[in-house]
Structures are given as structure tokens and as C-alpha cells.
Length: 613
Ligand SMILES: Cc1cc2nc3c(=O)[nH]c(=O)nc-3n(C[C@H](O)[C@H](O)[C@H](O)COP(=O)(O)OP(=O)(O)OC[C@H]3O[C@@H](n4cnc5c(N)ncnc54)[C@H](O)[C@@H]3O)c2cc1C
Image (cartoon, rainbow, N blue to C red; front, side, top):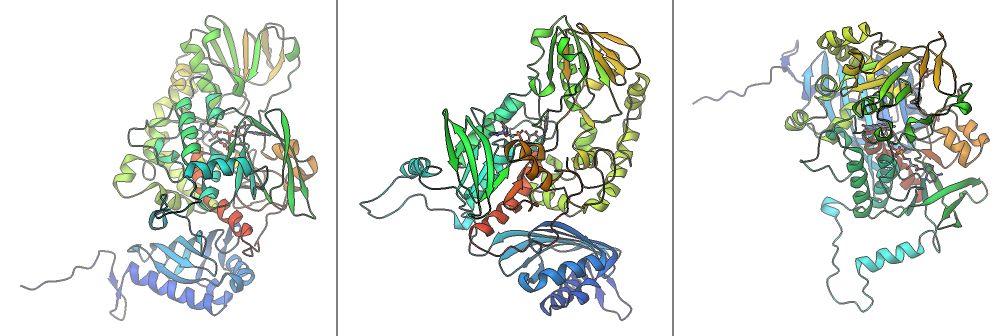
């Protein structure tokens, strides 16, 4: 019997008859790239990139989160970093795929101090996108899998301490007789995920949280809240949600998970503790952080301070004439207790994004007479369509079945540079618009002003650019379309004792006014805790510099000030949605670990400050 070895369809013969395959193209590119890098030849490496190309680096080369563009950007970055990074060992980790027009490969590599992973896309024989990420530091690998701790200490030892005794000793000492290397202010999901990473990396850390219990920042939100993102997108580091976990977790359930997680990940979590002030002592190279715990002030002196105080934590409450004279209840959406007390009453909800819709729907369900005031256009996407067309290939049961683990999905997402991400998003939202055309038509007929992002790129781009301006529809839109939730449009002129008056003179009688008016920039937390001077030095947090509404230019290419060095030494910001908290906590933790153990961390391309808030 004769056997023929079948070549994949993507393999083809070149002019001289040699077989060209994705694997060969990638191997050839990686080999030439490595030769250029090991020769210290930034120019030779730069010309291997297409004129229209992007290299996104998460800490591995730059000790920063940075995207450089085109051969010029690559040359500049390599000229500054090659010598100390000493990259080598580039290999593909899976069979590369694609055609000569577009070849894709998962890669790994090493630097002088760490091991990294990444992703490469070639157009022809030039790189179009390259992602490089630092995965672990040599000599400081996490104690997991093959390196998991023994737990038991076999043999005999007269000074034996149990696990519990060691934990109790740590609790007695850390923050009292010994100082943490890191203090994280804010113990929501962001602070907790980062705390878990740092624990694994053996970085002494205290998480300071003013709430009584981990998970309270979710528990204290409005009663009807369920996560808008699906479970596959929401896993925390190290412990995935179990297979019976609901697709959209109710807020109190996620609160309980966070509480359990904090305990089993052995975090030092100071609840009922408020960070009152922080000041950087330049001479000592450490922070002086005053926290109030059990009625007493404690001064902590960490080397690094992380604000994980939430991008949805600092309420934006508008100042409207007549507010102080309003006789009914009024509060920001973050303080909304739920609908129960408002059955039969007239509620006016100012705003038309996620919180506004959720709160309106719950009030309507409870029998209130509800009016939503839409002040500007809103992007709406039906949850089913978003799950199917927007997230389904990466974060879904379907994705898991086809081998796209959460980790892989995170890396695929990270591999698309922000400069071109909208080009991938626009077709998705075009398809959603087509699929849900009737739905959008009915909303418009009810007077709802829709948008799909300024360049039609939809929800994720709006989130990354401004963190607001959308609703993932889980039912409230139907109530708006059919008039059960009444709709009013325009600015709010004033409040009277019993009504809200709009700028066109419309008067809306009200027993309750909810300000679903969003949240302020996270550097407002720095102003509160540290000083206005430091907040201004750091500048605006969040946004890409896309020059769209609420995200002024110039182009930054990465989210401002998030998970990377800021203009204030030893001050960091962490947070975002569960996906971002999970993925980027690794890179922030590695940056902190490197500093703790004295690995040099020269930062390439520290961002400039263009906006104060
Ligand atoms: C209504 C709503 C729905 C959302 N839905 C989703 C969703 O479905 N999926 C998703 O991924 N994201 C969602 N988000 C966005 C985001 O994930 C959440 O806001 C999330 O809670 C952010 O986590 P965090 O840890 O960054 O901040 P937070 O959860 O806000 O935690 C910050 C913590 O800092 C504490 N703190 C602040 N100042 C101090 C101080 N001085 N001292 C001590 N403690 C302090 C606060 O008490 C708080 O617990 C939603 C946000 C909102 C508002």
C-alpha cells in the first residue's frame, strides 16, 4: 500500500518548488527576527514589520503597556530596550495557520529576566501585528501546578507550625510589626484579583477596603443587578467559576464568590478599613498611608501603592438648580436601594445607559410610574446578539468546546491593537444592526436616540474609550419601545418641590429622582486620597485618546494610566471589568514583583499627560 502525506490546504509551492506553509513562514520570520535581535540590530528587526504594523508589548520588552507602530516605532523601541531585554528563544507553540496573505502563530520567547508568550500575524513575509507578553519572572515562578506547595511538612520538627498558626502569625504581624510591600486601596474585584496574583508571587500585600465584607461593592448596588457580561468572560485568576454557575451572575452571588475567593486565596484583606490619606516620602522611597481600622489610625509604609478604587465608584452627581428644594427622594444610581418603596409612585430616572435601564425596569416591575430622561444618544445592543455575534467566538460554551480557553481568549483579544480594533468591531455591529433591525426601528419610533459609537464600532470601543454610553439590553428596551417606561428627551433645567423640569419646558411630576449619570475619572480618587497635585501630575485615567466624545486625543494607543507606570513614582491604577481585572492583574503583579526583588525595570515610553480628568 502506498501512503501519501497530505499537506494542509494552506501549504503551497513557491516558484523554486519548495513547500511554503504557515509553519515555514513563521519559522523563517521568527528565525530572522531572533537573529536581528541577538545581533542588537534594531534596524534589521524594524524592516521585518509592514509599513502598517503594530507591536503591542505587555511588560516583556518595555516594562510598560505599550503599542508601537510601523518600522519607525519598532526601531525606536528596540533601540531603547534590546540591550537589557536580551530577547531570545522565539518559537511557535502551536501549528501556525493561514495563507500567505495572513499567517497567524502563537509564540513563546524568553528575555534576560523572564519568559513570555505572544501572538504573531504575518502579511506576506512582514509582521502585521505582534503581541509580546511577560508571563513569569525567572527565579520567581509561581508555586502552582508542578511547583505547587506540599502543604504537609513530612518528618519531625519540634518547632512545627500548622498552616493556621502561620496564617494567624502573618495576620498579627503584617501591617503592625512588618510592612507590606504593596498596599492596594479598594477591595472590589480588582483589588482582590491583584491581591491573589501578588500572593502567588510572594509579595507582602494588604488590601484595604472600607466595606464590611469582600463582595460588598456588588452587594450594595441596586437590587435587580445581574452581571451584564457572561460567565466565561468573568472568571477570576486561578479559580474559574464552576460549570453550574449561571451565565449572568446575580450581584449578591458574585459578592459571595468574591468573599469565598478572598478567603481561599489567603489574602490579607482589611475590611471595615478606610484609607484616609497617602503621601509619597521621596527620600525613603515609600508611601505613608494612613488607614482607619476599628476606630484607630494605623500608618502603613508600603513601597508601592495601588488604587483599585473602581472606575464605577466615584459618582457623577449633576448640580441642577432646585435640587435642594426637591421634596421627594433623590439619589445617584449607585445609592439606589431598589424599587420596593416606590410602588405606585412617580419616578424620574435621569440618564439612559445601563444603570438607568436596569433601574427603570425594576421600578416598572414594582408598579412605579417611570420616566427615563435621555440627555444624549445611547448605544444599545441586545444581550443575545452581543453574546452570539460579539463574544461567542471567544467567551462562550461554543468557544470552550472549540479549544478557546479563557486564557486563550484573553490573549486573542489582547493581540488586536487598539488602533485597529474598531475595524474588527464595525462588521460585528453591522451584523447586529441587521439582525435586530426591527428592534432598533421600534426603539426609534418611541423617540429613543440611538447611536452605534461615533464610527459605528459599538460597545467595546465605547467602553475602552469612555467607559459609558451604552446599555446591554436584557429587557428594558422593550418597555421603552412599548411605552411602559415613558421617555423624555433633553437637558434638565431645574427641579421644583415635586417635579423635574426639562429645558423644553416639559414638567415631569416626581416622587423619586434617580441620577443615573455615571462616574468620574479614577484620578479623582488620587486627588481625594493623595493630593490634587499628584492627581494632576498623573492626569486622566482611562480612554485611548481616540478623539471621540469623552476620549480626547492625542492618540495614546493604550488605556491611560491603567496597570502600568504613571508619572507619579510607585503609584498604580488597577480595575476595569472582570476580564480586564483578570488579565491585566498579571502584568501589574509582575511589574510590582520585579521592583520588590530589585530587577531593573527601565520603562520605555512612559505616557505623557494631556488631560487632567
Ligand atoms: C451597575 C454596574 C454594572 C456593571 N456590570 C458589570 C458586568 O456585568 N461585568 C463586569 O465585568 N463589569 C461590570 N461593571 C463594571 C465593573 O466591573 C464594576 O464596577 C466592578 O465593581 C469594578 O471593580 P473594581 O474592583 O475595579 O471597583 P469596585 O467594585 O468599585 O471596588 C472599589 C472598592 O474600593 C473601595 N474604596 C474606595 N475608596 C476607598 C478608601 N479610601 N478606603 C478603602 N476602600 C475604598 C470601595 O468601597 C469599593 O469596594 C458594572 C458596573 C456597574 C456600576
